[in-house]
Length: 508
Image (cartoon, rainbow, N blue to C red):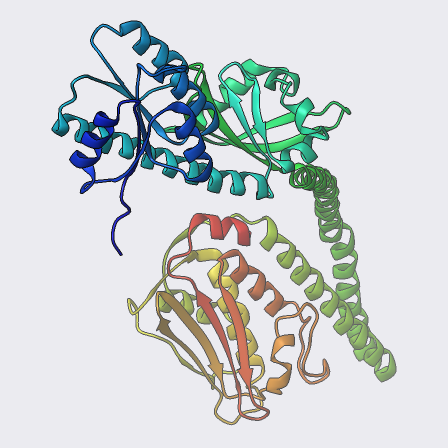
């Protein structure tokens, strides 16, 4: 595609000058000529040109006067004035009224005049491009769903799109006679908010509230961009406004909900602390007011059982024996409840504990009514656990005692303590070859007062494994069990290898 040729209109009342101009530039430009202002104006009514060159001295109307008319009716055409050295006043008049791009003195030099015409065309092309960009911007400006306004440095609104008019509840004419100060009373606060949000020529996401004439307060985010200066020299800014009133209302609602929740949590926490204090008082009462009468009953039944044996009263001896067993069981239950309650108040003091050493101490502490139980323990120094030594011994004591209890009917009872590594975690297990349990009920094993076997078969309060679970939770660990009826059971403990202090506090 060939580049567009520059269209030039040359106006001069002397035929010789017109012929010379045409002869000089017909190969370079598309030349049109006119012998006077009237002929030139008639031509421009039919066809547009890029550059208009007019001689100053013409009959009835001067070149400056002609170019002033052209400026008003065809402002896109770039205007040049051809004049003599003595016509300085005409040049000034042409600049002021005709808005000429340049003037050329007579006699003109073809090379210089050709360069002036090409420069004038570049100005024309730049103006066309600017107007095209402005029209595109105007389309985007008007069609934008977000409110947009143009504001000068004095706060006067120069332009506003339809969305801005709808947001403020004002028509365009009224809005353009307003100032920012009418909608943002505290301008100093606005400037303080804008400073930290500046990034080059743009102030991004400035949070402010706009007041409308009808009294509505609009929470919004404003992004302001410096556009340049107006013809009067005023700095201009484009402000894009995003209405976030709904978001602010939702934030306020969430803050209120959080405040209410914090208040309710504080109340519940206070109630919980009071309940814990009551529980402590209850535990003290159980330890002193309930345990003592139970011990007295146990001792008295032993005495009555002895007297019944001397008299040979089997019925009385049987009754006292049953009362003795029941009181002993109640005392064990009270002791277990106290131990369970203490696990919540006991502070964890972690250290490196040798698993084998702790297991050996627990085996030695066990009160066994038989010596045929085979214990398989890990070697000393094989593994160390980051745990509370006293609590770990409580856990192992409960697990080993359970394993011994449920292997009493086995011809060769066997209890094994082992360990393994899963990543950074250490898994410890206690395995027996006792009665076992239904694996579908494994989730009930560590429940409070949960028993998988009848009390007549195996004694116990159903609290020991609940204590185990509570202690493992305080160590940020876990515990679980596996078993099969008649095939024994295995209880697992997982100690985290890299549990941080926060995890331990949360578990507590």
